[in-house]
Image 1 (cartoon, rainbow, N blue to C red):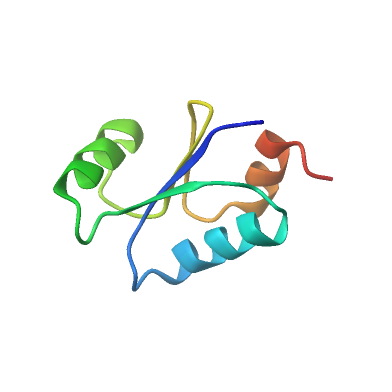
Image 2: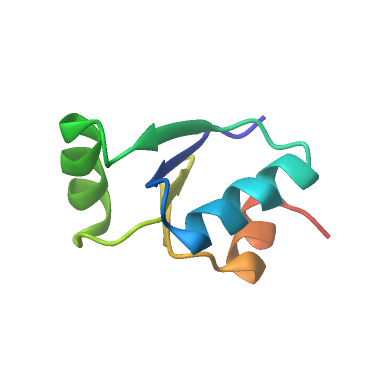
Length: 78
C-alpha cells in the first residue's frame, strides 16, 4: 500500500476534489490542514517549492494541484 499525504486547506476546492477522489478509490491518506498547522505549511513548501495547495505526496512523488491522471498513474488506478 502506498503512503499518501495531502496538505490542504478547508476552503480549497481542489483539495476537496482530491480527498473525494481518494475516498472514492478506497485510498487511505493523511490530511494536514495548512490553515491550522504551521508545520504543515513548512512541509508543503519544502516538498513542493511553492505556497499553493493541495500538495500531495505519494511515496515521495509530489503532485501539486488536483491532477487526476497523474494521481491515477502514481496510485496504479485504471
